[in-house]
Length: 75
Image 1: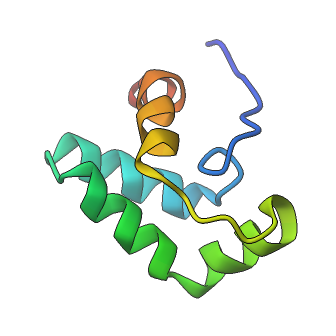
Image 2 (image 1 turned 90 degrees about the horizontal axis):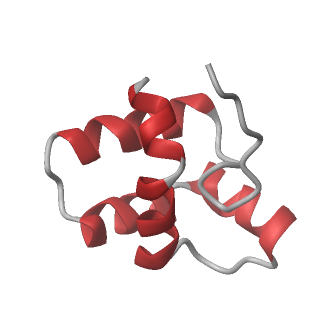
């Protein structure tokens, strides 16, 4: 299995959040709803504040995750 350390906003989240994102993607939940859910979580906000200057997760971040992290999650 190829294991990559993800450095983006979603890759830095806990396994709980990455698993939930994976489930929501597989269930066909719209990206804007996943992003809204993430950005409302206090733990996500803490990580974004600590590591990304408080900048929220965007639909572009999710799109990039779908191309890289999500296929690994499926595997």
